[in-house]
Amino acid sequence: MYGWIRNFFVKMGWIKQSADELNARGWLDYLRQRSDSGSLGESAVKYVREYTAKASLTLADIGTSEKELGKLLRQAHGNCARRWLDHLRRGSDVTLGPSAVRYVNEYAVKANITLADIGTSEEELAKLLRLAYGNSARTWLDHLRQKPDSILSAGTARYIKKYVAKAELTLADIGTSEEELDSRTAMATAAK
Figure (tube, helix red, strand yellow):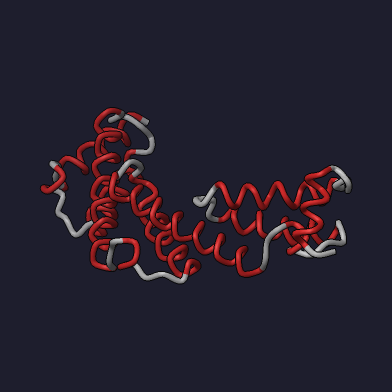
């Protein structure tokens, strides 16, 4: 049956919707209302198609098309890329720096948009990643100073050095030295 006629009959109560049709329409509504759904958007599109087929309907029967589903999914991916970029700019979780950069790029590609389209560049992402590594080094240094006798001190010192190098900083830039790290590692080893 033609999509708009079926939709009219459903609204009038002349045709009862199956559970599969209700699920298809529910996932479609979710996509239309949540333009930031990202990877869940991919699942939502899959469910719209799956439940529509199970109900023996076409996309037109539930009031959509492949074109709209593609547009909604690209929109969701673009918004997801923007959200990860914002997350990076805020620096709210230093441990997610590398993943966040990957997600920005991944979702921009899926949305078929450029980094410029979301207001950034490879240079800014590289800078934000270096900042995240620097913040991560500082976080590990704080941990080392707060728990100087921790059995994990040697590993913590290695993380600090690793992240300082990735941030293109020096130990002095984050307020420590090789001597402090060696001293704290030695204290932890002696405490065992």
